[in-house]
Amino acid sequence: MYQYMKHMNKLIENFYTIKSKKTNEDQINYTFEILINNKHDIFKGHFPDNPIMPGVCMMQIIKEITESVVGEKLFMEKCSNVKFLAIINPEINPKLILEIQITKIDRKVKIKNTTKFEDTVALKLSAQYQILA
Image 1 (tube, rainbow, N blue to C red):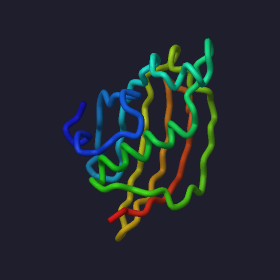
Image 2 (cartoon, rainbow, N blue to C red; image 1 turned 180 degrees about the horizontal axis):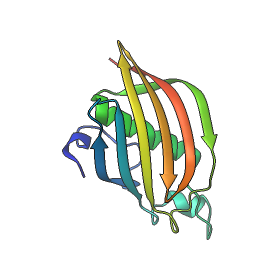
Image 3 (cartoon, rainbow, N blue to C red; image 1 turned 90 degrees about the horizontal axis):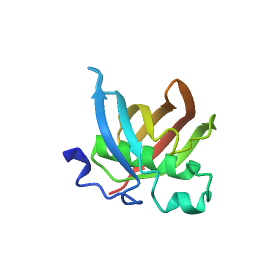
């Protein structure tokens, strides 16, 4: 795992691993490749014999990755757009690509995210976070 993630606490341990990070020259657009642990206990309850990535877990992953980029703890202030477009089955598609545009203004962080597996868009999310003191 990357060094910049070491100082940030994950809400759900061993749930995912960041495999790669790419940053555009503008330092606003990021692409992360993550690998979901399809053996994690969450999938035993969501759902037995038919694992599906919980939407709230995807939102938490996006928040944690954003925290790692800005180096601050964040609190979601508002979500203006959340669209779950495809079911993520971690046994079939454990590798996800997260494209995140991150803009930091004063004590606020705005993001736009697109999460994909292969050529399928699974999630689109726009949110604003408050930086916690």
